[in-house]
Length: 384
Image (cartoon, rainbow, N blue to C red; front, top):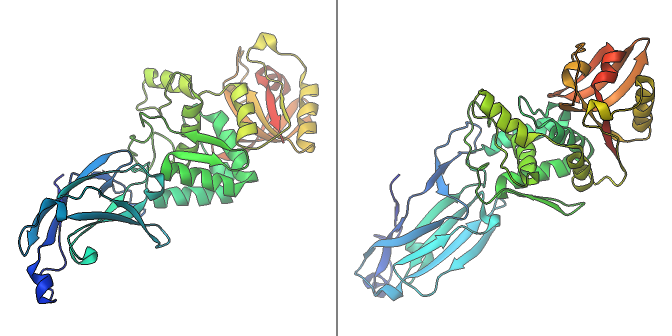
């Protein structure tokens, strides 16, 4: 990418004799810009602009009506927000033909900034308008908005796909259902700033300083297997909760990638109960989970009764299961769970259990053998 150059709009403009005889800035040059999304729903990554936390150099390339002293050149930077409001962002001291500009203000991400280099007349000399990318600069803003709106209307569209983010997906599903404004704000702010705050609880999620999640480019309208809104919610929260390891979506279908994603993406019960408190603002949380078969207790009849009671009492219930046994009714021996679902209805009918649950981007109803249900059930985390 080459340098960006703009010419003053004043060359040839008639004015007073005194003004025309004095030097003016003609051309501003800025160092190489970075590519990102055009944010128009086309998924193109051809928009050039500034990137957060990066420093760019601006320089006057030439003048008209003579060459002034270097310290005669003044600089200003204004930004225009999405509402059309203009704010003076920076003025440089000392003056000079060359200045640096660092993008270190979250508020100007996803906006245009205008640089002015001038000696006498700010708006009639060197002017350069430049786009500043959103923090997740490769994710098309229009597509993010489409994803959000669909999920607010139909929360079950939230989908962890082939990732191990089922626990976070369950939280997202409850969040979108119970607080659509908060859900929208979280994803919108995460996309723009890389930071999202839950207003009701003060809980803040930030992306890592290495920005590995930001640098992943989408392919086939997804990041890994995730649609944009799901990536911005599920992956960022899961990565934020990890202490030692980064969370990354799978880069391919290899066993190594599957194992790495699985190990960094799974959510243990304490994570789910914590997010019920911090994200969902629940103050009554119950955890009955057991992570191994040998630690389980209770029979199917009592389990079903307990789950239905919690639903009747207004609890949101995330159930930990062995998916092959409970969802697909396979008669296999499980020693530990591998999946989270949100149970919405449950009842026993003779030797079968009928469960209505959210998982994998839909609400499904399963009828399974009661023994398989008992074998594949590992407790729940419920909150309200």
